[in-house]
Structures are given as C-alpha cells and as structure tokens.
Length: 181
Image 1 (cartoon, rainbow, N blue to C red):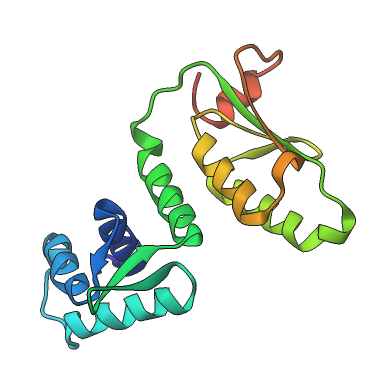
Image 2: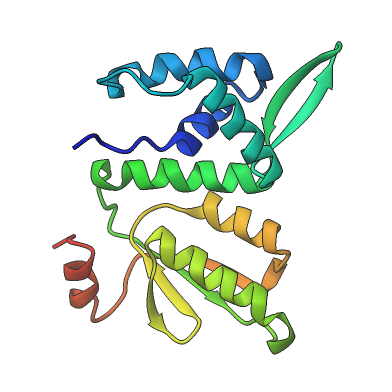
C-alpha cells in the first residue's frame, strides 16, 4: 500500500522555507522534495498537478499571488502561516522534550461570537490541547506563536489569555495523558 502524500503540506513548507516562491518554481522545488516518497510512476503529470494544488491553496486563502517585476510569486497568508505552524508543531511532537512547564489557554468569548469561539476551540483541540476546565485548555509544549496567530486571525485580542505555568497541582493524569511521566 502506497503512503499518501500531503501535497498541501509540501507546498506550504516550500513557500514557508524561502518566504516567497516564484509560481513557476512550485513544481520543480516540490518535485525534489517528493522524490524520496514516489516509488512508482504516476498516471498524471506531477508538475501540472502541483500547480493546480498551489492554485487551490490560493483560492482557499492559504497562499496569495504577488506580482513583482512582471513575475508572479506565491507568499503565505495569515491562514497559510497558521497552517504551516500547525504542520511544523505536529512534526516536532515526537522530537521534543518537555521542559516541565504547562501552556494554558483561557478564553472568554461572547455568545454573539459563537462561530469564532467554536473555530478557536477546534483549532486548539486539533493542535493537541486538552480541556482542563470550561474554557481552559492545557498543552505541555511551547506554542506561543500558534496562539498569537489564532488571536490575530480570529480578532479576539485580550479575550484569549496564554500562560506558561511551572507548578500545577494534581497534574499526574495530565502527565500520563501526554506521556510525560
């Protein structure tokens, strides 16, 4: 069974690595990255497929096209930066060591912003946070940049608080859940 390739991740990582990428260069750079993963010949033209995927990422708001000196370039949007940060954090999960500190996010969002509150809750849950109490979420690894992007993207400002806690009583179950003990 062939492993599924996450083209979205590869394109975002390619653009994120250099900050800006010529639109015509998406496919060649990504092709080099993909080489180790591709074991058999594809039925479709990979270069065309990657360019279509890049255009879809533009349409979905992850990338934007900028024109400089009559050439088109791809850059990350705020949504793309958040997604890239999410990918990078997910990739690091197995490689990090816990520093003994807990990252806690608390929020107080009005009922009229229920939709954005649900997005926030889903984003931090997907990132790996678990609910400690109502509107209080906890995570063991550094993620301040991710939270700042969420605050900015969702325009919550001071309604979301991020804390780094060194001492938390009764954290045995949390240590067990995150496999820290």
